[in-house]
Amino acid sequence: MQMQTERTVVVTGAAGGMGYATSRHLAAQGWQVLGIDRAENLKPLSKEIPGLHALVADLADSGLPDRVAGALTSLPPVAGLVNMAGISVGDTIDRLSDEDWDLSFAVNVTPAMRLIRLLAPRMKANGKGSIVNVGSPVGIVGARKPSYAASKAALTGLTVSCARNLGPDNIRVNLLLPGPTLTGMTHDWSAERRAAIADGSFLKRLCAPDEIARMLSFLLGEDCSYLTGSVIDMTAGSMWGH
Image (tube, rainbow, N blue to C red; front, side, top):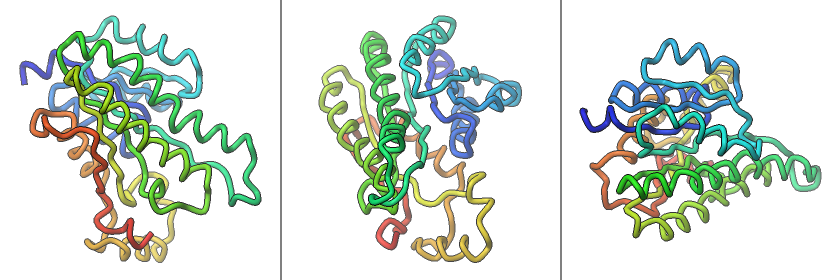
């Protein structure tokens, strides 16, 4: 615990359901958490979660790395990064606009690349680090929105390539594929839709945000010190019936 209180993890999408649960869980473990989101409700969360430092930012902004670098000057050395933020925009291929295609990659892929590029040298200087990109099973099985599925698929190439690049520096990079999870978005679903999606899981239920948080904590920690370049399927089988 002493060691973790001296380390910082950067979490994007920190105001979302999974992001909030992850930030809370990691802070409870002693991490200093730099939580990034464009939502203004991120700031009140820093009062609820001791150890959470809020940075309200637009992930698509090319100035994001400079803002993150500035925020880290007052925090302990960075040892972890969770690229969780994402956006689902677009339509079927016959109705897909260039704007939605570009926005999908601008939010779902490019910020992850920029933050890895920014933080990897810092992790190297500290002797180690762990990076987790949060993708989606649609990056493998496809979706109605090619823009979303293609951008999530791109995270696989980014993850494995960065794992290859950064492995000699003792920096691990993995990709997590969560299954349907109980978040603010799923609370708007009808009971029938929830039940139908839950039935596609081998466990016959939706995932809880705290379960995602615990897996991310594991991937950031020392208990999986030889795990890198991996794609972790946490869909409880629902990917195959997606």
